[in-house]
Image (cartoon, rainbow, N blue to C red; front, side):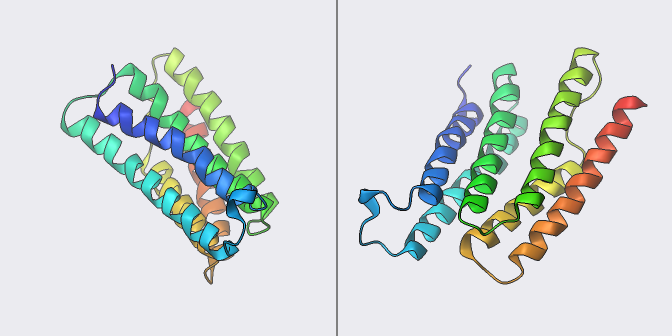
Amino acid sequence: MLNLPNLLALLRILLAPLMFWLLVDRQNSLFEGIHVSWLDYAAALVFVVASVTDFFDGFIARSWNQITKLGGILDPLADKMLMLAGFLGLVYIHRASAWAVFIILTREFFITGLRIQAASKGKNVSASFAGKAKTVLQMIAIGFLLMNWPYANELLWMAVLLTLYSGWEYTKGFFN
């Protein structure tokens, strides 16, 4: 069912490759004469819009009782696509540590696998507070890295630590 929350998730799915394109295809003839900082601003704007849709699709789905199976698939897919586009694009333009991104993405794939297993066994797979906090910190880190602001790398490594902690929390909960 295509309701507003699912449409917002679809919008996020469409915005992720746009942001990635702005980061990795800077030599494209379409961008000729545009200073690279404007591409950073455009990528950051796309990221902020996509991140806001992440908040609102969940809020609206819960508030309006529009939680659907399709939304349960689209929302995490959109989240992963957005983070993947941001982190890989930032590694490509040498703004993010490849090791930090590797750790974050490895955790994401591992926990996604655990969540699929948990759901197949009827276990609760909803995001924990630490899982939500790591997403917010990752988004803030990506924003700082996109804008090339001070302390961006420190925020990225803080996100790595919280990512590892929330992954440990999920893993512990899965095996208990």
